[in-house]
Length: 364
Ligand SMILES: *Cc1c(COP(=O)(O)O)cnc(C)c1O
Image 1: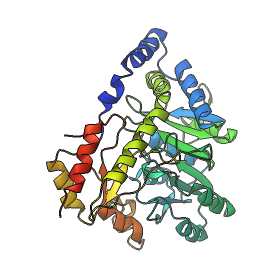
Image 2: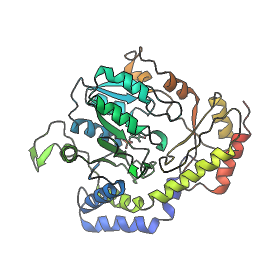
Image 3: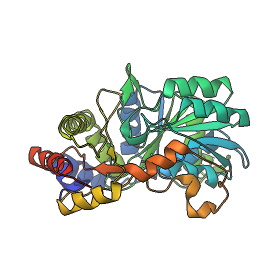
Image 4: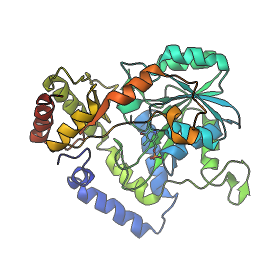
């Protein structure tokens, strides 16, 4: 079976580097928030070209802490899209804020600037823009539009580590950028991890307090909404190693995307051209009106697929009919047709050719 991800294979070539990072942490006697976390925060801030980076426990915490750092209060409205796996919505509802769902653009599958403009009439305090599948959203226009209405912009970059446009990195267009280092992400730990980046020192200072009980100093709780969400030393040390691999691995993902776009030729499968520095191809997603049959055909041909994501946020069971009046035509249509093909940096030439061939042999 050609798997969607093969993380052990991805670590094989760098095993010595990873092992010595682990040994260094074990020998140091410091396991939470010490030199390795600080070192990774500095290198990731430098890599992104941003003033501040705060390591946290995971990507969902990063989003929630970012909202709290931006002083989002219960009942405040926060705009987001409904096709990004519930992560932003969970963070919004954890703050007892009110999600306002807007539709996506069919080409980028990320937030549509026109839909955002319409939602800004509702005076949201913040907008969460997700760079879905690794491709930068129309973030410049979204940020300008949101700022015109006084809303702050949080970028969810959990699928877009290293994506950039004209040298500007994902996470630095708006006010705060949030990252996940879940193992399958383009920059993945060997466990959970996350980070918040910002050029605004006051957001960074608040995020740093919120990740550790709301402390100002040890045992001095100053901010409410604090919790324990820290990046541990082992993950930080491993991430420092893997940050050095990121650009090369993103290139490898783009070259697989080029092979798929050039090679897959089937009237029942729509592929997208995915290339350039603004797209790090976290997921290669095709569309087909015969999605169920296509997935079954690929499974039989030894190709694992998945759906990112099958149930839009506003249709999730936890909401029952709370968003029954919310109609997101593009989001809902895409949810029925999208299918993710394997696209990880260590896929072999033969495996890529096999996926292409299997797609081309599909007949509904
Ligand atoms: C993975 C992911 C998250 C959540 O990250 P965790 O570390 O799993 O909490 C948030 N947003 C997006 C878009 C993601 O892909």
